[in-house]
Length: 239
Image (cartoon, rainbow, N blue to C red):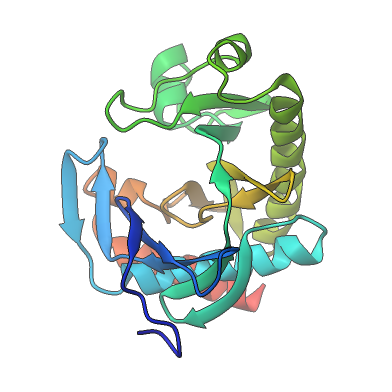
């Protein structure tokens, strides 16, 4: 039980979050887990306190974006790892936004990691753990009926707007927003921002040193994973 809400019906459990039936037909309850995963779950570890850090970071970012006019799924924070969110039908593609070459982009295109891109790039990946979340293009998405052309245009436009807003926020915190992924859901006839925005879903580098403050510390065995997450949280609080 959280507050006066009984969480007894799990609707979905992912690698880092659990979704429960909400107190009414228009809401869900989201709970963050301490599980850290990489390489589509091949690497996995429990990191005590990770869920709390991700929840607080994501809640701060969502509150900031909401103030700037971005509609999100967040209704209210229930406790350190739990939130009440709007019921939404998730569009089964992720929007990936890149400002700096890193990760799979560097490997795929032979661009040195850390290279500043001449313009921000966007791409889509299919939400499918079984298939390894492959990249998918606009015409393939519409051909499969995953989303309409209008929805894709809207998600891209919103992703670029969110990127601008987040770059401003993180610049104040001395953090370079390298890249990140977003999810959107259909709610009340429109698309809203869903899922989380945290060091699990973003690459955050120190502006001066390029020290990695995100999930790459876990992926690449760099050590002190939670230290990086705590650093992001403290900087956001003081930004």
